[in-house]
Length: 122
Length: 110
Image 1 (cartoon, helix red, strand yellow):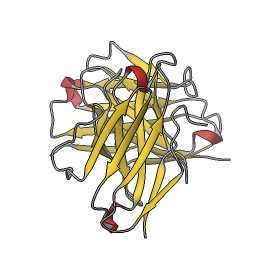
Image 2 (image 1 turned 120 degrees about the horizontal axis):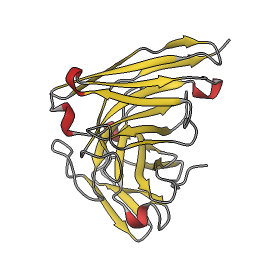
Image 3 (image 1 turned 180 degrees about the vertical axis):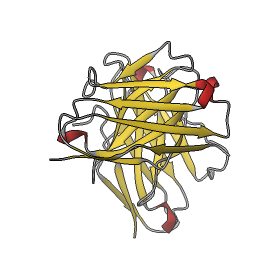
């Protein structure tokens, strides 16, 4: 069974940093792209970033470009999101999602984790 | 405002067929696969339709997807109370080089 378990969320002050992790199991991790998608309280889904199987292709939403960095460790079956210069508008439930192909472009997400909550507030 | 436009709400009675639409442009829906996700209250999104009209294993054939030009649709036949959820369309946008989601449609089963 494919499982994605996010961790690392919490309450953080504006301007500070946070690193999210996603532990993957039940599939060959380095055969697929991975994504981060977030959902602000009471709002819809917003794609944040995607990374190809080999980290050779990385894409970001404009809202996080230059502040967030996605990475993966295929040896550890793990996905990460380093979030710097956090803002109140980054407050959301952050989902890790498995891509359906090796690249994050054109081919979407097929399995989602349960999410980890990030709250940015002073 | 979302790049992909969905009606905020839809409704139907048990057994009915409902359709949820998603409107985009040539740079997104017009040129890329459309995906549909179901989000039940308090849960993570679940893939319903991929590559415009393909159903993952385990998704009932009551759910079907279609695409025509720059619009896509999700149809649910034989509506059930457990179908009450938020539904989102998504696709890659070639011009923006990002994944875009519709604003979501809240389906109510009356």
